[in-house]
Length: 261
Image (tube, rainbow, N blue to C red; front, side):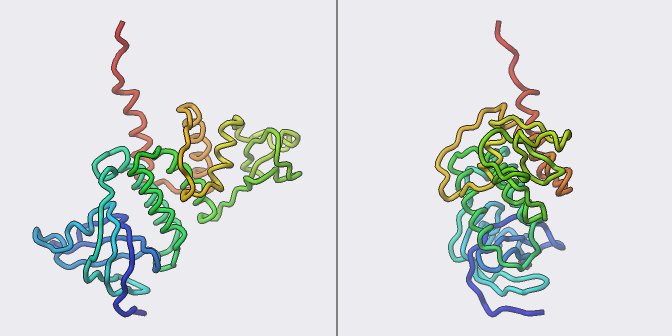
């Protein structure tokens, strides 16, 4: 088992769980070393000195011994902060949790994924600053598809490579078909053109350059339908955090106040 010397790294807490009576396991995505599971002895004690530094949705600079296999260890936290808005809002918490969970299951531990660390950091920053969390989640889901071995071809028609006109998504062909080739797949998803525009946009958009985006509720629902189909039929994962979001999205209608007439 390869053990690194004492390392300083930046990390984001994905989740934590109790281990034995007084200890804790903390999963992080790090800037240099990929995802790591850390063992923290005594972390369940009331006066544990790093208690605030290992809360969910905390980002910080840590020092510890990192192992290529098995558990790693944190010695100290130098600087850290929590994404306060996310931590105090159940809805934002749910979206952020799912994004981190997706990254966690998409890549093996201890494999450096600096681009996805940067993505996760920016995603949480945007959500914490008030950006539409559902849109950030959709972007994450679309851009993570290749990590699951699914690489939808969004750039142009998979048959003739047209880049302009009307398009639809074909699971059969693993990408978009222009209207001249729709007859090749009678089971295409029948995606409307506004939704298709956002699907294609989300596949290439850079979160670092994203300043504003306004998507109508109806389009969000259509985006969800397509993305859910892709994850159900081609990825095949069913995360508890996504199930919670699906349930949560029904709360608004369920508890909507009756019309005042």
